[in-house]
Image (cartoon, rainbow, N blue to C red; front, side):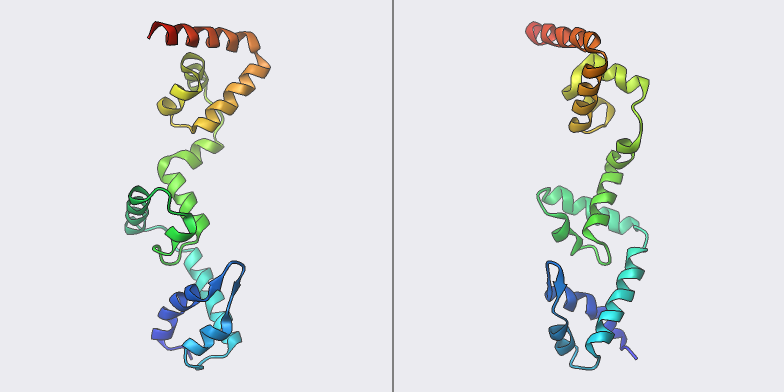
Length: 166
């Protein structure tokens, strides 16, 4: 029978002894004073991870994620997830993108309004206006250039004229 205090500290202990691709379970067992076997620790960890992965994002989780990203945007997802108990690096990245609207936009087809904006503004300015990533706008722009080069050449000419007039 697991003690409540051991269950709550298991995540922290595992984090200390986790290396890329492995966990030093012998050290985890020692830190839990040998109350559990290596197999028991592994199984409890697996069950905890399964329960945590399914946990929905709370308002507090999202606020903390936003705060951490704004404080240090270079912070890796792996480092960031250590502040968000029960979340994986991948979950943090996907939730951040969802919060920014990027994940949903990425999967959506380009609307006629977005294509028109891309034609009118070009990839750089269009990205900010329609809320798609610059890479997404560039890829769509290049696709358009392959399928209808004359239309894109007209856009390129207009963009050059605009740049010269400013």
